[in-house]
Structure formats: C-alpha cells, structure tokens
Image (cartoon, rainbow, N blue to C red; front, side):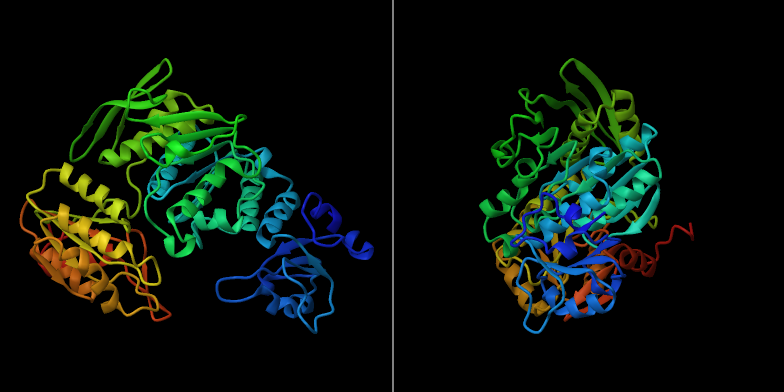
Amino acid sequence: MTVSQIFAGCPLKAPLTPGLAEMGVSGLEYDSRRVEPGHLFFAFPGQHADGRRFAADAMSRGALAIVSESARPDGFDGPWVEVEHGRRSLALAGRRFYGEPDERVAITGITGTNGKTTTSHVLDSIFRAAGKTTLMIGTIEYRLAGRTLPAANTTPESLDIFRLLGRLEAEGGTHATMEVSSHALSLGRVSGMQLQAAVFTNLTRDHLDFHGGMQEYFDAKQSLFRSGPAPRFAVVNQDDEWGRKIGILPETEAIIYGLGPDAGLRASHVSSTERRLRFVVRHKKERFAVESRLLGRINVYNILAACGAAIANGFDPQAIVAGIERCTAVPGRFERVDEGQPFLVVVDYAHTDDALRNTIAVARGLSPRRVITLFGCGGDRDRAKRPLMAQAAAELSDFVVLTSDNPRSEDPIGIMNDALVGLRRSDVPHAIEPDRAKAIRRAIEEARPGDLVLLAGKGHETYRVLNGRTIHFDDRETAREALQEFGYSRRAS
C-alpha cells in the first residue's frame, strides 16, 4: 500500500510530495521505539510530551515520513506530512492499512459513566455462548479469541484497535465488544470506525477535570452516535436523563431500553436474592426469562444493555439466556472476598458518587445487619466530586472508613480533607486512615456477623500511584490477608 493510498480521504494541510506519495508503506507507528524501515511515524501531542520530539529518532530507525497535525520543528528537514488532526488521521490510516476490518467484524461500542465493563463482559459471554470467536477491549483486560492480554487503556489507540481486529479476523473471529471512554472519543481514537451497535449506559459526574463541564462530557459521549459512519443500531438507556437527549441519526435503528412500560426493551418481574438476579426480558413480541449471578438493580440495566446489543447483532433469546447465565462474575465489580468469615466482604470499582450510591444500594439489597463502606478519592482529578462521594457513603452506610486511593501527585491528606467536608454533613460513625492497607484492616475489624464490608474505588486494579511511583496494591489481596490475620481461613476450614 502506498502513502497516497494510506491517506486517501484523510484531510491534509498540504498535498503529498510526488516522490513520497508513491512510496510503499510497511507499517504505521505512534511510538518511535517501535518504528522499522518503511513505517510512517505519527507524532501527535501527548499529555506529557510532544511526539515531534521523537521525529529524528523515528527517521533514524527507517521511517518514510513523520505525520503530525503541527508544523515541522526547526532544524528537522526530513519528509513531513501535515494533517488536520493527528489521532483522527491515525484512525483513518490504520483502518485503511488493515483493510477495513470493521466492515467484516461486527463491533459493539459501549459508552457511559458506569456499567461499561459489566455490559461488555455480559455481551462477550453471549457471543461466546453462541459459539463465536470474539475480541473484548475494556478497562480490566483485552480478551482475544479466549486469550487474555493486558489492558493499557480502557480504549487503546486506534492503530492498536485495528491491529487487534486484524488478529481476530486471522483467527476466524466475527464479533468485537469495546468499551469506549470519553477521553477516547474526544481524542478521535474511534474516528471513522463502523459500528454494528453503539450502546449508551448512563451519564453521571466524572472526568470533569478533562472535559470541563457536564455538557462537554455528554457531547463527547454522544459523538459515538453522531460522528463518522452512523452505527447500524443505537442501544440507549431511556431511564437516564442524558440518555433521553442522545441524538440518534435517521439511518440508525434505535433499541431503547429501561424499566418503564414505554421502553421497547424492558425488564419485568425483577427479583434479587443474595445469590441470584432474575427477571423477564420483553422486546416486541419476545418474552424470555433470564438468571444472573450479578446482583442488584444496576445490573438489571447492564444486562438489558447487553441484551439490546445482542439483539442488534442478530442473536436469539436462547444464546442471550445462556450467555447471561455463564457470566458469573466481573473482576472488581461487587467481587466477594471469602475466607469463611461470618460477614460479607466485597470489592467494587465505584469511584464516583453515583456509582457509590448504586453499589451501596446493591449491598443494602442483600439485607445485611450493617454496611461498612471504605472509600477514597483519586488525585489530579475532579476535586468537586470528593465531598459528593463522601456524602453518598455517609448517607447510605452505617460506618465509613475514609482513606487514600490513587493520590498521584497530590497530597493524600489534602484529598481526604476535601472529602471530609461531605462526610461531616452526616453524623455517621467513621474512621480516617490514610494508609489504605491499615484502613482495610480497620474496616474488617469493625465488622460483626451479618455485616457487609464494601471496599470501594479500586476494584480490579492491582496498583496505586503515589508521587509518580506505581506500586503493587490489590484491595482483594489486602482484604484476604487481613481476614487471615483475624483468624479466618477457608484453607484451614
């Protein structure tokens, strides 16, 4: 494939030079360390560095040219392709280089503040229950044809997505499920990608340090449905106030889900116990009962979203029911830590006030004697949500432990003081412990038979970020160690 073919349909600020236009391209890269002879190197501004700084390094490794949305730096005289938008150009170029795999692989993109990961896991389980070879791209991991790959970002760079789609095709795969973050949408990582289905779960306060306001955050989410090729189907939660504002293009078929009687896809006869969630799914003339080990009202919505996406992909109720049944757990989403103790300990990723309320509601639905909630707030993120999270924990819990999360470059005590404002709006008994390991022990020490201990904020994460250092830390491991220290051990029993 030539340079001119790679950039066909891609907005350029200046025409390609004749000599460069007809050169053959052997690969695309955005990391100069991976450049090989015959590659095009895409140099766009990043959070910490300007990619143009690595232009000379890329050329020394054999790059044909540098591609950037910015002008060539002073002193650099190598081939330079100036595009209108670096990341969007990378997406369009990657799509062409890998042969438009999105035209053959049915891709479902899932966006929203909460529920993306659980919905993705349920949908991928449905696809696999139907015998399909799949790709799942998400916050916790990437899963390709049954193999687990580490997840660098919730939504990787567009070039990596198309590489993964190419690998899926090579293994006979047909269906892909992808969490699509608001950052990825704003940065153009899915530009030009044809989706079989676009799913919107909900929108609550998050990432406002990046987007600036709720309208800008919503605009980023909505772009999944309105920019680039129209998705063939839109699966939207009408019970969410922002979901009702989604502008669906005329050429996109809508599947509107919710719990109300006017939803086209809805749940009825919902029942939840400590072990099972059951309800009836209704869509047009179809009626089928589903059972899941995922608990709580919030998972009714997540499962409905997955049902809508499965219907958009042409799957019948039998595959949907089987896939929901087989999805027994999602790492870090109300995940139990069991060492035989006479109270429940669960770990959850809830890191916004709305997610915290939803998760505590799930806990309350299990009718524990008391709910003991541990939480912290991330550093270098939206400060305004810190007291809101504390208020949610205080209003719905019987005991609260305020601790540290990922402070990043901020002072952990300063972050906790921001949250303390919300905690003090209630007279709920509480403890304050900045050392997260000690805080987890404190929460477990507080528990009595019949209680539920909720360790919120980090979920599946196995690290903490403090002052530029990343250290190993896993709430599940720490909780298990604490339980064993207090004399509980499933192995011993």
